[in-house]
Length: 276
Image 1 (cartoon, rainbow, N blue to C red):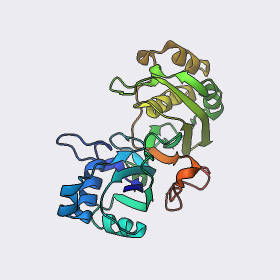
Image 2: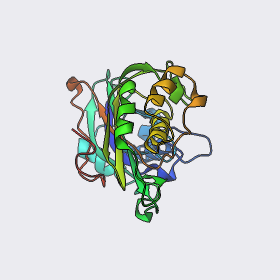
Image 3: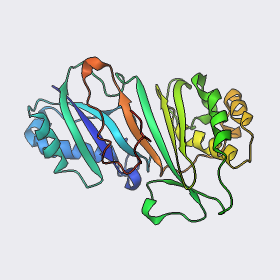
Image 4: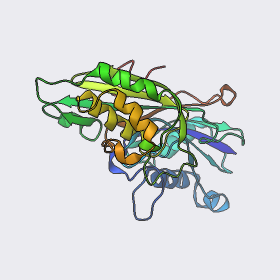
């Protein structure tokens, strides 16, 4: 049978989602926990391999990650939640589990993903937000130009070639992705970028945030974002911004699969930031 899981995790201590040689990853911890729960005999008959909706980078967090795996072990949904959680470290939690049809894929059945980037702005960083929010140092008498960043975001909406915001290590078959909406919420000392799209390139969100902050600080005009997009050249865009504030917030699937919504009530992000 095929089981889907909803995950939340603090990615600050991990080298990202995907298994890597000699690195500590979310996938490694999850597969070890599932294997321990099903037992050696069941694992030998059907080894555990998880497929994820979004392969988050090192230091990136998740509020609504979805994975699936195949197994010959039958358990009630909450038994999967309680049992696998007992083998997971405190930084990783399963919120829900359910049996899904074989045609369901956590990755390929998803048609929409929402990311949140949480940013603290000001003269001093908050130690309480260490590794959980990005930080931009600005003097007390200076603030980001939110309106300029909103103007700059307009050119990014729709289907575009996002090569200028693509990491050289990106494995996507195409740089063409569709962004449905970009919302800039708050301002000083806390602001949030909410970006919703069909899919994203490696480092794409962090590269976009880096460009937004160049505009917000007045180092570039809003029109510069369209120039960077049209150039399809990573070299002219801003440096990749830190991973600390990036959250995979939500994954959307066709209603026929009845995938549960992520548990967002236990997020420290303010109400309304994550959206419906």
